[in-house]
Length: 466
Image 1 (tube, rainbow, N blue to C red):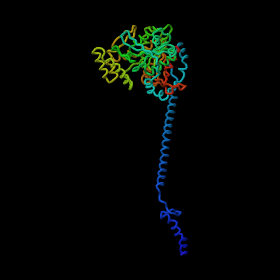
Image 2: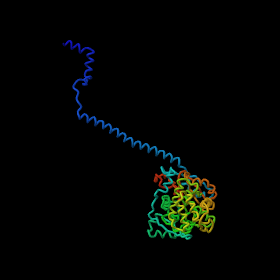
Image 3: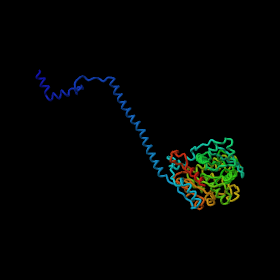
Image 4: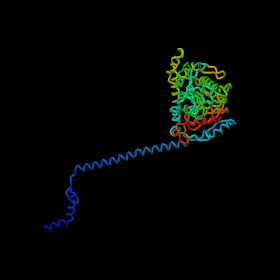
């Protein structure tokens, strides 16, 4: 038996069979009885699986912030590159004269330095234009409002006054209204807003704040029907009507002390009214001697309602219909019928056409008599355009326009010869600014997202040079 067992164990086939027997029987290779899995082993395997899933989820969570950081980094790098490409010094168009040379030498820091648009806002024309109107702007808690009645037709307009902070610090609140009634001892800057806005808009507040920082008194004129002042006559504002501005300038000029200057500033359609007024007064040589200079921002120069693009024509139509709603109960039956037809018209041209017979206007020659009505749309647009009056402007005037202003730049380019025919006019064109935006990033990063306006500083530098 022992020999048989020995021979059996030493046979190669038996050795293979013996070594593979435990594997076939499902037993451990090195002997011993196989142990059944206990509940503790099952729970430990489940715990190990859950830990692996948690580590996988944690890796995904860590990758999300990293991905967001990379996307933000690429976007900011792209914006910085776009900002560098748009940073250009303004182009200056002017005639050579001793007066212009003096102004240019005093404005070197503005005219020769590159205008760097702000990130995310100044680099986009649409955002630049929207931010000009939607931004809140610096709030002046010491604004003084004055209601002025026009002597020609009885309309009422509002003037919002802002005094320099140094003067406010030493005067009582009750004496602020007296300080603007006269005699006024500080330079005054009269500001005209654009369409569908008033002096509470962000770009107007920003400019008036810049004026008070320079020690000047800022006066924001709300055109008739704007500034939360209801119309008292069935005559809303018109781009061709300059007698309201004429009355306000004469009113303020009589309050000024001797040798105190008055500066005029206009934005968009307010700039069109301003240059038309200066041309009329310059041709009649009747401009008050205290008016020393003017600045025009984003001036359309030519009024052409038929070629206006979206969304500007919708915006202007809404502003026009807003004024019409306040006049729907005024006037005679024919006037009310025309107003309702204008309100129901779906287009800007149709809305304006129904109001033409009742639109206020004035003669372009002295004594600038007030008249009512136009016979056609072409007559209204020709009378409203200020381009033909620029040649008669008699005081230094700075015109600022942006290359990416889709609303007015084409008109400015086509009217360049009219502007350069007058040696008193200086045209400044910048690469990026939108319509009324001009948001830029100062070198000290005090306004990273473009709260401040480069055009405000340029206008203040121009007034200081005068």
